[in-house]
Image 1 (cartoon, one colour):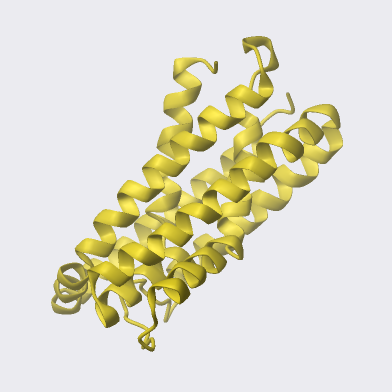
Image 2: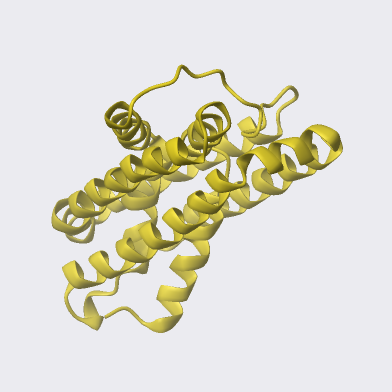
Length: 210
C-alpha cells in the first residue's frame, strides 16, 4: 500500500495529465461532436481498455525492471522529461491547435468506435510516459508489494481519466462553442497546460534516483 501522500500526489499528476490536450482528448471531443455523446462514451470504453493494458504491462513487467536496474530508470526518466517538454512546446507554439477544434470524422458503428478509442490510447505516447516514467516514482518497495502498489496507482489513474474524459465527452459541444466565442480563453488554456507540462518535465528530470 503506497503512502497516502504518494497516492494523492500521483492522483494530482494523473489529473494534470488527463487535462492536458492530447490524442485521446482530441479524438473523444471530435467523436462526441461529430457523432453524438453516445459515440463519445463508447469510444471512451476503448480508451479505458487501453489504460488497463498499459497498467498491467507496467505492473507485471516494466516496474520490476525499472526498480531492479537503476540506469533503466534514469533513461526512462530523462526520455519522459524530454517528451513532456515537447508536449509543452506543442501546446504553446504559435499556431498550436486547441483540442476543442473539431476534426471531421466519419460515422462508425459501436465496434469500430470502441476499437478506435482503444488504438488511439494504445498508440498515445503520453500514456506510455505516465506509466513508464511517472508510476515508478511513486512506488516504495519498503511499503510492501510493488505489484500491489502499481495496480492501486494505475487504477487510481484510470478512474480519474475515465471520469474526466466522460465529463469532457458529454459537454464537448458546449465547451467548443464557449471557446469559439472566446478565442483568448483558448490561448490561456494552452499556456496553462504548457506550463504544467514543463513543470512536470523539470520535476521528472531533477528527481533523484531511488
